[in-house]
Amino acid sequence: MKAMQTTASHRTAEVSRKTRETDIRVSIDLDGTGRASVSTGIGFFDHMLELFAKHSLCDLEVECKGDLHVDYHHAVEDCGLALGTAIDRALGDRRGIRRYGFFLLPMDESLCRCAVDFGGRPYLVWSTACTATFCRDFDTRLFEEFFRALSTNARMNVNIRHEGGNEPHHAAESVFKAFARSVRAAAEFDPRETGVPSSKGTI
Image (cartoon, rainbow, N blue to C red; front, side):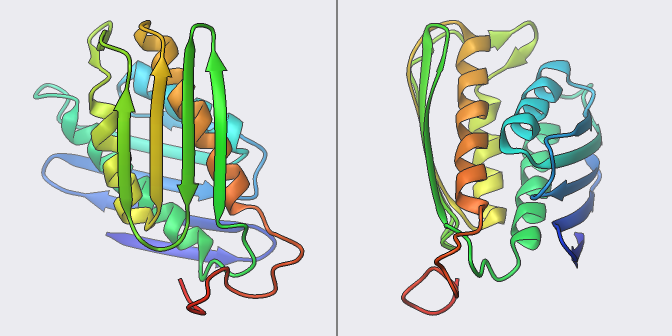
């Protein structure tokens, strides 16, 4: 996996990942305005990534060519791996950030609670009250694999609890928006934090 970070006024990274199953390029600007250019070949997944960019205020570009004739699994999981790596690279040493972020987000009948920690230890907690799983031909259970891959490669703790609502589009939308708002809060600079936000002195 190839990664690059530039550190001017914006925290950015670009990641390329190519396997026999997928060919992915992801770029992110944590200090952007919410612009998105996403093309994975999976319309519903594109929509969720665009929502993440809009509500996190990250500028995001994702290009993915995957073996969609086999399944959507490889493309969705590998995009999580690449996006997680890009977030990790863009954060750098994580000096001066708030580190923690959380949000409670309603989407019509759905409600999602999300909390994240950029503390360097990857862990995913995932639960959903939605028993309906398909939006057209997309199985929303793949989002657990996406967030597990993302949390691992971003070295972050992600706790997502969808607490109610059985319309799968609304459920997924509440999850991605809550995650985006949590990332936005955690990645922000804290004007009172002069170093790395950890008693260990490093993350």
